[in-house]
Length: 306
Length: 331
Image 1 (cartoon, chains in turn blue, green):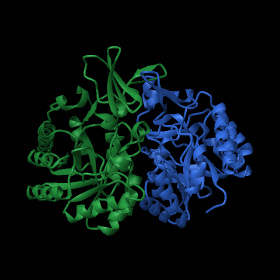
Image 2: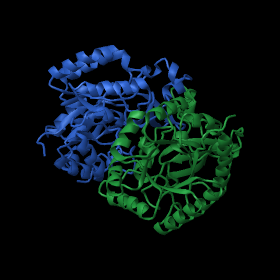
Image 3: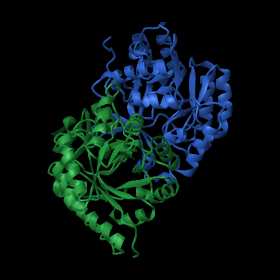
Image 4: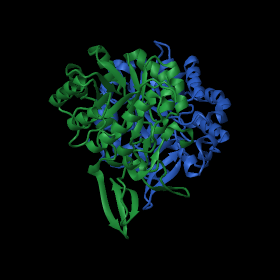
């Protein structure tokens, strides 16, 4: 087992302006204690043109900051130009790629190693073995998996030479569709969406008719209202063989968030203390870790049985 | 109307009795599952024991119908044997094909039961020609059930490119999310389509009266409120009423079900091989009515006669029907 777990910053899931996008990754590059940073458009291909010409500079800066840069692929690929994006991603061999839909796998040449994102269904050892056989070296598991499955997959991954990563911070991606919900609730159609998703930096809250926070919509994606917070679970997960943790970008101070996770992993800070600091950073936010060990994904059980 | 190639009608069979009903009503193929978590309709009282499947295969094949066995949930880590046995048993019991979604299970089936025809489940969400080609090349998949996210034009483009058959849904429940990629149900209840073969399970549904309204809840969340006296819809999570920004209503999808009866000619023109009817959990009366209606429509289409529309309006949930993603404006 590796002696040091890695921290990955997942791809930004939301539609931020190009300037905000650049500023965010510049600060991440210079200040955040992260090992891997995923860049690229996973949710909606219509957003990519806004920052496509800024990618190269961000990649350079992140590399100078000591980060491994990974290019993430689109999660739901239907249009010809979206397939073309996958083909181009596969053709550019300079950076590691993260497969979020098997379309990209179809384009990757045999023998090339790749990462697998959390939106690919890796539920069991058979699938993990198949993907590792095709070149998967880093697999972020679906957030839905319970701890028992995570532990079994981590055990199976070690002899295959693959790292197993778990979703550890941020709104949890729960579904993807061809319909744009942001457009729908604004009375628009997807093709004439006016990019209204850009109004909500962390997604648009969906509440029950009783006013209870429930979900968040982000264009064609549906996320949890709660932010996953696995700070309390890190020790158990590391014991189970998990070697990497994923933090998903939000509008809050992600450098500070990354610092909390890094320090808990390095045993410089107790999980309880880090969780308190995280709650202070996000006073309005409810947390969850229920997919790992709770009765349902929305649940939060701060102290796991060891 | 010109005569066209006859489409294969693939019909749901939740029970042995429903299977016989579907075959009698004119199904070319029936699909069913074993009575455990290996299939995506793992509901109490539904599905087939090994003995029942053996009898069903004999019954259907004697009448010229094929039996497709859905083993389309994602095997649980540490328990892949249960799913692998399902594949082995389907082969041994003479099923005409298995419908699979999981990469590991597809690899197992291709290696251990190579003679058994493999269909790719809608749960695999192969939504373009590249992804489909990958499954064909890696696992020898002969047919792909297309996700319900595609327009008719996109389906036609896929068929022009892929070296396998395609099957599309034409009637019944409609997932608004890409199938096999949705964990909304387990977020609210801990039980999911991918892992347990259930969505918004009845075990987590509660109704209560509040301020003259009937509140339907799933787990700890209110999914809908109906004024007393009106029919309270079953709280399927993505069909619920919520508020988002200034919007209040069906954020994700209206409680409509799919009826693509008027699209059959277009779907045939788009090159699809088979039409699928959803509803293994539905009654025999429902199965009979829907299968007979589509039998007539498919035959009419093949013989160049006009297809009657709207005949099944009374069978769609909540009375409303939609053509779903087949029409681009749905997005």
